[in-house]
Image (cartoon, rainbow over the protein chains, first blue to last red):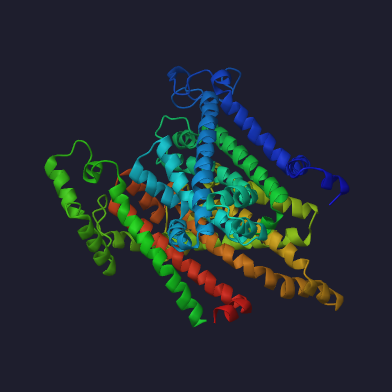
Length: 287
Length: 316
């Protein structure tokens, strides 16, 4: 560790390392572009993404229509930008569900030994299902809508997050400072909140950053299969599914949302790699 | 070794019990009356009553659970509402297609992933390493249905090298099988090869830093022998566990690939079942594929024990 590293607070040191990680910065740049486009959608894509204009159908990208139009003459610029908004919303919601439920389940299983076996067997059973198959199974039950897709992805990925939190908590539970807190009479909630969970954050943050990418990708896959958000909701998967039958004459309908999806997932993966390298280098070999 | 197999099978039993319970419970989680959801809003009360009776929904929940396990014990997963056939028959027809395609994709994944990962590790920080890792990163970021669509446009429509979709069984015409399976297998394999290449590279780099590798080099062993006999043999041990994950991702990915390329496998029939509210098919399909993956993971654990004596001694 360099002498200046010792003087800095852990947060500043982490930020400094992240800002020197070139691939993290590239990922941050890509994700920021998509996130800003999503936030500014009402201003930069004011045309209704579902507005039909048959006289403009199958217009290739040009000065009037930056991304061209689809088979109903809808502006692909509007649909792709509003699609970014939906992807970011779904990704964020799934991450939030995982952060809350995954942490709660993982912390309970790791800290309370009596709960460990029952919670983890249930967890293992959910993890035994192939992810996409479980997601389509859950949407089959709940029905196809954005909210139900979020619930489905939450159910699919929460067990994975819970397992990571549990692994950290099991190690931290045995640490001397935790034992000291127990000896000092601290309650379970206080020990978890003050001593264990803050130290289990690094692997959780790394997991959540990768999970954001999986959620965006799986949502697009569900929409593409027709079991995600109902058309004409402008998700990237829906746009590509609708454009599939015209892919020979109008390849831009699938190419442009596909590139947007790839940029988003690539950015999130680079971001996750950077966070992993800086926050928890031990995970590098496992992921 | 037998002890390890028995222990792993014993560990899988409670998981499969919970998996079967969750699959049973699926139909009861449908908002409202499942029979109406299946029959549709235009169905007559008689039709709804028939569906309720056929699925046993008119019985008490414990009775239904008992019937579910009694039927499972004799291999009866119910009848597909869409296809009108027993779910087991449908699965037996479709599984070989999915397994053949997954095996082809797995071979491609292992070839590309291992070779590029090893090459990247041996040429660390050179253009070979960077090219392999860029390929790997693009691989894990590219949705397989997008890659599949791009391949259809290029290889089927423009170049006319391969058919756009469909499936010919290997036993009917091996060359036809190769032609119909190559694009679907590549569209799955390239993405997973990216994942495997990243793990292979990091595992190889870790092994290459070990003292025994330095000792082997100091003894004057040829580089090829150091890499193949000492480094790769040890690096393959953790990589084996990744194969289980890759098989799971291949089965998951088959849903998309089979739908995209019109391949009559398990993935395609499950998607159709979901779209048509064929719940017995969804339940049976999920249960069978999950059981298959649990078995694959047991097999991977056994391979792990075969490769690593430490696991054998611990597990004995």
